[in-house]
Amino acid sequence: MSSTLRFQVVGEAFTKKPVEVPNRKDRPSEYFAKYVFNRQKMFKYLPIKVYEKMCDVIDNGATLDMATANAVAEGMKKWAMELGATHCTHWFQPLTEGTAEKHDGFVEYDWKGGMVEEFTGKELIQQEPDASSFPSGGIRSTFEARGYSAWDPASPVFVIGDTLMIPTVFISYTGEALDYKAPLKKALKAVDKAATEVARYFYPDVKKVVSNLGWEQEYFLVDEGLYAARPDLLMTGRTLMGHDSAKNQQMDDHYFGSI
Image 1 (cartoon, rainbow, N blue to C red):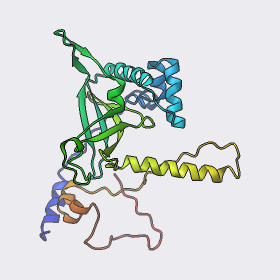
Image 2 (spheres, one colour; image 1 turned 90 degrees about the horizontal axis):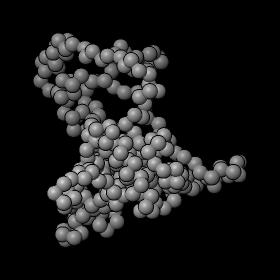
Image 3 (cartoon, helix red, strand yellow; image 1 turned 180 degrees about the vertical axis):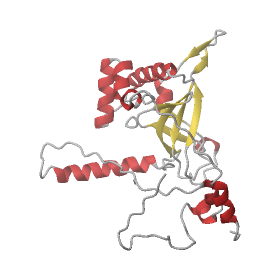
């Protein structure tokens, strides 16, 4: 970094204007989970028997039959289209970082000269994205290059823009996990089994232990210009060079700043 670049970036920061964010007039309870197909939406859009079956699938890992999947897909499609959705996608987090999606439209040709909106349980449960772009073991045979994305019913689907987002796991043709969600599901199952056995020593009626992820509440806000001038932040996402901060925690002094 040149000796003057930092000062130029800081000077540019003083010319920026704050972004006005208008306050919503409705209460959080009125719009929370508006675009999420949670249990309240399931109860509204699914037949009662299908709703009860889905609760069993989510809570106890019961098998999801195709008839139930078709009914769930129909309810999801109706809900999503009411929010303006025209497409669906299997959404997963590959080991190559970021996210990946395989999109399909709700509209299908009916072979009678017209179009129909269709979304089936088969499309909901499983799709076959190409796995050759991911670390799948170098398999090059055409029929082995595909991967499988499978819906995770424990993660609610949601709508972003015009797309119904379906959280999935992603595995290769030979069964290797190619995403972060598949091994996480296995780890959660192992923790549930071990923790339930321990908990039953104290509470014999315990049937399941649910693990929760706590997000870190502390963060560091860096100006975009200063970030762009730091190769270490750009390449690694962390500080590898520079001086210690002017105020650390030597005397337990506060280090909060205004935002």
